[in-house]
Image: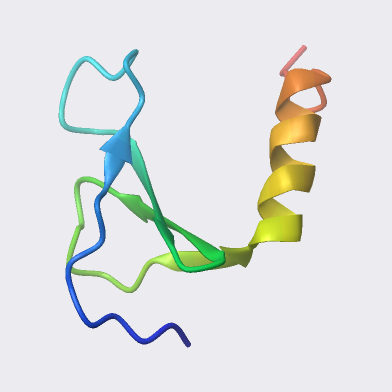
Length: 66
């Protein structure tokens, strides 16, 4: 579990047009993800290597729905 001594700087996609967005924050070497509709819920956390693999998968189109 990540020790948060201060509130993370959450970021939303520039394509997010309303309040139902996924938010991402970087704390140390970990990446946190949360649902903007439920900001008080515990965020998912990923290592830097996991985040890099996710980004590569997005860029390669691995998560596109047919």
